[in-house]
Image 1 (cartoon, rainbow, N blue to C red):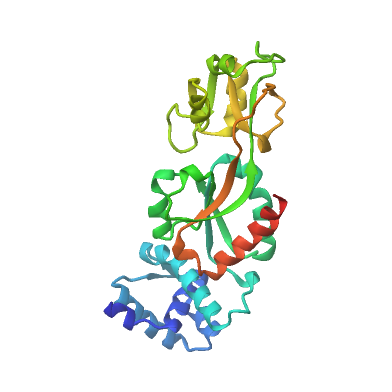
Image 2: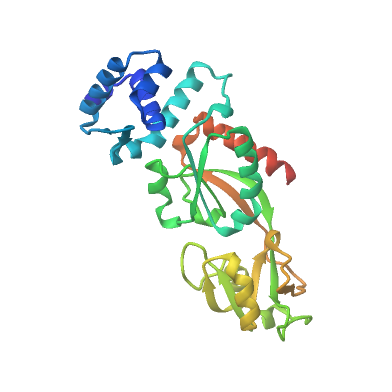
Length: 299
């Protein structure tokens, strides 16, 4: 803890600006200090973090990997401090840094376009990284600050995470438009015996989300294939004469047609999830408000 006592807000701000500007004289002008004063603070920062942090070049400085790894956390810390001092003055238009979201291609098609449209409009200087959904690494990525938000389904999220329900979704049974199953009616028992494809974006296995629904009716699904993305599912279903249960919001698809069922499987929730350590973050509260406005109000 001794290192914490050697840091102050001004040093964090200098570190943030050096990561952005990569030039000591520019940072000095922005801070209203001399370049010598910035150099002295950088010396102290190097001592505190036991790293060079920035390497001089002909055009300024470049950050070391240690400095690069701190950028995201420093932006969050300074934003939270600003919100603490002026809780009513949060202004997303001045946000900088990185927002990292993890999701499957389902949310890429149904949630991300509108979310990112609003985020980019309100915070044009905020950089955004969308990464593949990794359910087994979620907690580690969240705790280390490598991930801010996940958009997914509840069964993939640890119970310790905070969540926000975005909307309800319904699976529709589909088959290829040239399939021998097209335009036919089936009982659930007959349907269970048909060759089926499931989409499992994070855990490659043959266990589908509606296995329990079939099991409660004394039926076992004939799942023959698992694919990692919804984007590829339609082509595979069409080419293999299989059936699948796909979320309604990525339908219709010209390659597929629905199979009429007397009873639909239970609906399910699409949620945003995050680590509780982000609950008080000003940026996080702003992001959740966008999600509430754009999606929750439509339920």
